[in-house]
Amino acid sequence: MAYYKALDSRTVLPVYVNYSKSISIEPEFRKTATALPFFRQWILAQVVRGAAATLMELKQEVPDDLAPHFATAQKLVSAVERRQLDKAPESDFDLTGVLEILDLCNKISGRRRTVLLLDDAAHAFSVEQQHEFFEVFGALRSRTVSAKAAVYPGVTSYTPRFHVGQDAQLTNVWLQPDAPNYIEMMRDIAKQRLSKEDFDRLSRREEIIDYLALASFGVPRAFLAMLAQVLEMDDRKMTSLRLADAAIDENATNALKVFRSLEDKLPRYKNFVSIGRQLVDSGIEAIREYNERRSAVDSMMGRATNLLLQEPVSAEIQKVLGFLEYAGVVRSMTGNISMGKVTYQVVVPHFSLLITRNSLGMGRNPKMSTAVELLNRRDSHVRVRRRVDSLLGSDYQSRCRLNLGACSNCRTERDNPEARFCSNCGTRLEQVSVFEELLDTPIEKLPISSILLERIRNSSDIRKVKDVLLDEERQVLLKVPYIGPVRASHIWGLAEEFVYE
Image 1 (tube, rainbow, N blue to C red):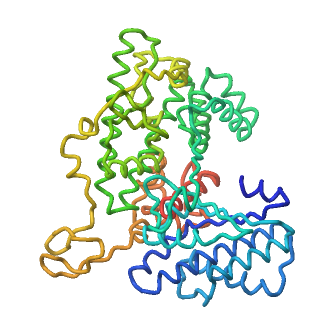
Image 2 (image 1 turned 180 degrees about the vertical axis):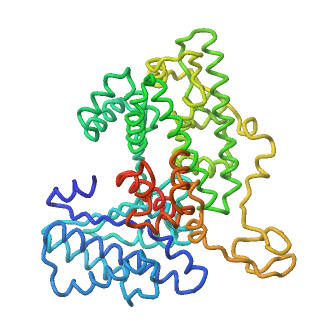
Image 3 (image 1 turned 90 degrees about the vertical axis):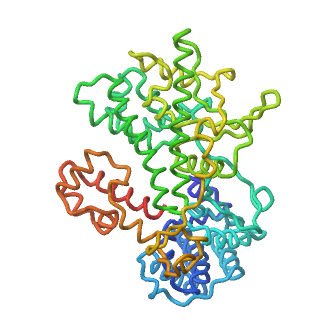
């Protein structure tokens, strides 16, 4: 959206760059010392290729002095995306040269300045890659060039020389379900994306669009997926509530799948993911117990949707909360709440999880309208306060440790992530490639329904994520019953996201 708005402005030259394929370079970091310089070349080549794409979008003719740079950038990026690094051309891109190329693009297009929109960098990159990226990001600026990057809680790692607030301003762009115009905006999204017939069908069902909008927790893609599931199941003559709850249950399951996938993507933080699952389960149970006590007094009293964690919250738990927020399982509210001498950090669990686990205290025969009202109602006095140790147990600190992998010979844990030999028996330690492990992950780890997974297993040889990615033309997926072109593309996209995002 930012790209196309800037493109229409006639004053700003937008350059969109997506770094999601960076994990293809990850195995090289374990093989050669030249991986980091090559990675920097690739970062800059992506910017040059993005500038070329913008000029093409504007139908601008490329001068002879720029054409070779554009060609080299295209070949280098293509080699990385196809995992053919040995075929990548020699390049000599540097920061000064790239800024000069961007200034030339400004003049060609008649624009005053360039804005770089750098996407998928701060969660697709490894820690080492992120440090290199932010070194480059901090220097990609001039009187006519500025850069924006997407960053994420929990998984973004800045270089020690890059300071948020000083070198860059942080802007929160999550859609908040408690925003005043949230429901109206989600209704408009549904109206724009669905056919008039389908939108009217849903509108005739009691508040189902509003219910699913709140359950999506501010993620339009999840909202549209739930709407599609309701429309698909509508012929079964189920009640509106049962239709919606089935879609919400699937959405809650998928949100947790995304979080659990961090065990594979960030193996050293496997223990943190385990702690995160316990924190969510215990926190939602605390909210459920609190709301049931309130419903026993008055069925229409306000309900709690927030969990207040008593400060201080350790750095390890902050990391866990960051992972949960990155996966969309919780949201951390900006600013703490002070009550006398005690300060609390506010955490909001995913509304789909609150609904699925009956945590709103709506009784045995709930109405959809009641759920919408309770999720929309805001009461500053309704709050669930807990200490972290009461949710996780007094031993949680000892369980919050990095999983560095064990020696294959004696099973002794590594002393540090860079160790090459076991400190106990001296056996050479295996250097595992996260990229290769992700490709070998079973398809059960993808956020796909159990029914669809069973169909794929029974009607094809697809068993691992790499099997899906190799089916680039979707020919194997299309042979599975009830999978058409749209659903096949969706499944392939989920596999691509699992590996590259």
